Length: 428
Ligand code: GLU
Image 1 (tube, rainbow, N blue to C red):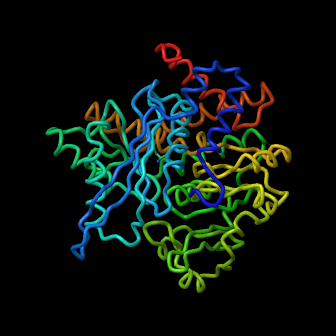
Image 2 (image 1 turned 135 degrees about the horizontal axis):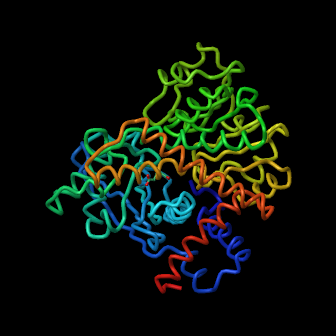
């Protein structure tokens, strides 16, 4: 979240400006792309279980829709800010473009903490969010999805409200829906698996067998859980995971030198990915400060929590052994840290490439809903792997050819595609 002087939108604009300079982008395209096209900010009054009305603040930012309807998740978080949502909407534009799916970028949020809300209260927030935006979102305008602390259940409440308002069935309004209600097989694991598809390709390019590697992961939510599972299937070993502790309002890292056990940890994890520290003690894990995940003697770091985690400060604690930083989260690495990674020759798999598996599978969900015909799990995963692998190699080849840092190469491809769509439409 936006904390202290860190502003994720400044960071997203700085990343964009660097590549816009490199591409010698014209001034109209720059002006258009460094800001969102549209923003909505609104109140959501909710009658709470105790009878009192509480007003929550909601947002939707539509960064760009030149290549297709805006697309992106809705986050529930107590420290949500409009600048965070702006940055995330911009990253969604690049994410959809780099994997070449016909969608633009958007993001939404509500300032709230679902840890302290009943299911009924959360349902009212979801329905209220849709009521405020019912005419500004939809299958051909802007398509939401799950994100930090939102789930398939939240998506279904939102869909139900949208369909009530518009009087019809519109499964293409939202993705990440439950199976049986228009959801796609594979959507739950898509982001985490996609992260590891890109990691697998990076290791292949370096001539390293995943079996000879170990990793440390920040976060134990949906993305981290499935990334660890697939990385373990490839033979790698995650020796440390960190997670947020709601009781202590801080994070801890859990270390196990012979590899963490996802299933065992899931037995002591809440639905937001919070591991119960008290119960982990007896399971043979060392309990460390939250920041310790970055200090581990590993080959690979996978930040899969929130933005602003690998910073100019924390990057100094990173082991010299780290060869790859594979970004499961959105915006985990600041420009100051990027500089250090680039100088040290650490291979970066940038967020909007590494974690594009979620939105790619959302796109498959839309396609299946439009056909009203749903694919087998294997077919979804194969298509996902193909898309992610192709996108990784396009970025990697460009990075090699032009001697670019991977993040910059991914930006070159994404900005080029979006700027062209804008120019072709006469917007720039
Ligand atoms: N929230 C996910 C992301 O940041 C998925 C977005 C989507 O499926 O639209 O990429």
